[in-house]
Amino acid sequence: MDYLWLYIAAGVVLAGIAVAAYLVRKRVAESEARQKSKLKKQMTSNIAHELRTPVTSIRGYLETLIACPDMPNEKKLEFIEKAYNQTLRLTELITDMALISKMEERSSKFEKQDIDLFDISNEVFEEFGERIVEKHVTVENCLNPGTVLTGNKTLVYTIIKNLVENSLKYAGEGFTIHLECYSTIEKYCYLTYYDTGNGVPAEHLEHIFERFYRVSEGRTRDAGGSGLGLSIVKNAVKFHGGDIRVINRQWGGLQFFFSLLRHAD
Image (tube, rainbow, N blue to C red; front, side, top):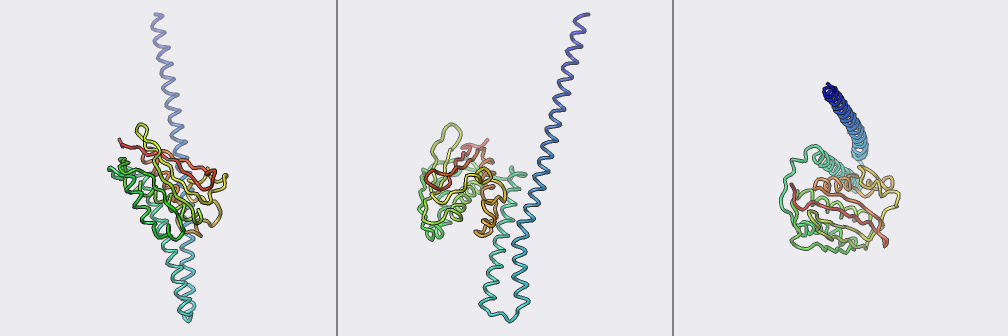
C-alpha cells in the first residue's frame, strides 16, 4: 500500500513538472512573439521613414520642374539628375529590405553550392575598381585560391561587397583594404576584413549592425545607400552558421572578424 502512495506522489510531482515546463515554454513563446511583433512594428516604422525621404525629394524636384517650365535647360538637367539619384537610392532600399526579409522568413529558398572565396572576392574588387582607383585605395586580398566553402554565392558576395562599400563610403581616401582567412579550424573559415581609414567613435560600435542606424544624422543619406548594408552582412553571416564582430583598429580604421561554416548541413 505504501508503494502505491509513492507511485501516486511521484506521478503528481511529474505531472506538476510537466505543467510547469509547459507554462514556461508558453511564456517564452509568448515573450518571443511579443518581441517579434515589436521588432516588426519598429521595422515598419523605420521603413516608412526611410522611404519617405527619397519619395519626398523626387516629388519636390518634379514639382519644381512642372512649376517652372521656363527654367534654363542646365538647371532642368540638374533637377532631373537629382531626382534620378533618389530613384537609385529608393531601388537600393527596396532591394535590401527584400533581401533581409527573405533571409529571415524564407531562408530555405537560397540555394547552396561550393564557393571559392578568392574568386568571389576578386569579383567584388573588380566591381568597385573605378571607385578604388578614384579614392587611391590599396587592396590587399590575402585569401588563398582554393579557399572553398558551401553556401549561397549571392549572400557571400554580398558580405564582402557591403564591407568594401562601407569602407569606400566612410573611410576617407588613401587607405588600405585588407581581407584574409586567418584560420580554418574544424568546420569554419575564420576571416577578417579591415580598412585603415577613419574608424567609428567607440560608443557607436555596438549599434553598427542595427538596421538604419547612423553614426551621425544624415551620414547614410549623404553618402547614398539604404542604411541596411551592415545589417545584411550580419544576417548573411548568420545564414552561413557564423558570427561577426567589429572593433576600431589601434592604428586607425574598422576591423571585422567573422566566421563562415565551411560545409553546410
